[in-house]
Image (tube, rainbow, N blue to C red):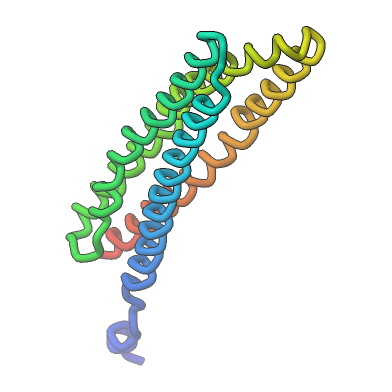
Length: 190
């Protein structure tokens, strides 16, 4: 038996580039859709909050400050979030693998910044805005019902901050890390 001939004749499965590119293309399109959806949702929400302030004509300055703070939170988040758009666009299958990996790592760093630092700023500004906005109406309800209203809002914010936010961050990190791992595997095959 000629082991050398058998060894050379066996087929070696090549790197499945197309599956990787399809996975990355799907990730890119999902993230771009999410970016557009976030832009539309936060813009419409800001407009709605401004219109509610206009129609309700609040008497206290704290209510107006709450409206401004809530809108500022959304616009600040959108301003920073839209800076990731060029990074998503740069995830192109026609670039070389080294450049592609650098772009993917840049996306990962930017998303980590958005999910941790920017979400903290957004959450603090929005929470402050809601607290200031609610003050005028909570006082009208009386102390007991005002405390109940603030309690319900604080419970909902806590649930979002300590349950939903970490779960969402973990899911997004897993998606990017799986793409990076798969790309590293393909690069190591060469």
